[in-house]
Length: 320
Image 1: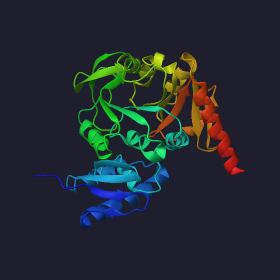
Image 2: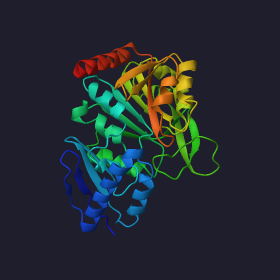
Image 3: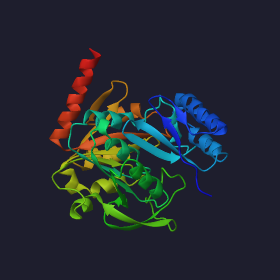
Image 4: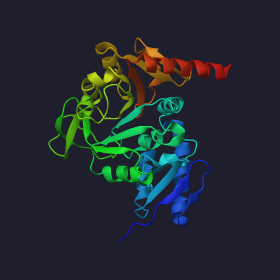
């Protein structure tokens, strides 16, 4: 049986098109659930949304993120359905920085791209129409990712690979599409190709002299990925890494601070500033929910450090 055309949702207007009565009810339920659960960091939302999804026909929803960006995913998906709530902002600190750097000639390395949300946005006109390479290891996620490239004019490249410390192969395991990982030594799971970040330079995918945003959503392999990107770190590159809320030791940030020459930066939601970290006590205050992923930036690039400082200065001027 052929799947129906995707439901259409416009985040700027809230208009939902192409849904039947039950799908409309489900959409408004997902929106209401996101708004209520946002009061406690969306705890339980994913599970409830995925239960609701079982009652729905297999169908995609195409969300218009901006006039030049459409992001499609299975309707009712627990992770991405929060986008139906127009007040929901996904990874606000990264969004803020990408918007502020729309004029910079950079390439996005979207490592652990999942369905390609950031590749869709960074390559769109409001964000500067940047080149993006979406790197994704899961063959289950790949069709959705490739579809998102296709419906946006094929404007970003899809690379089927995991990111790790060295070139090779590994086993990818997990249940949730947003949390597949090669971390650990799994005996089962999908065998996947692994590339180090520096292999992208060696293989001619990227230049050794460019400007890069390197988004590392690699589910427990962040440190190995950074180790595999020492050459890339010497370019004008800024790394964006997850610090999980259930890690009181701040393992990724501690490694960056103690074992690399990178400057460590975090966005403080209280001050709305990007703060340079010389020790990790600020993360104790910021990381308040154990089930949530937080993020830090790391760079040795004077260019990116100046841009971030300028962004802080611009924010201060807006407040005054």
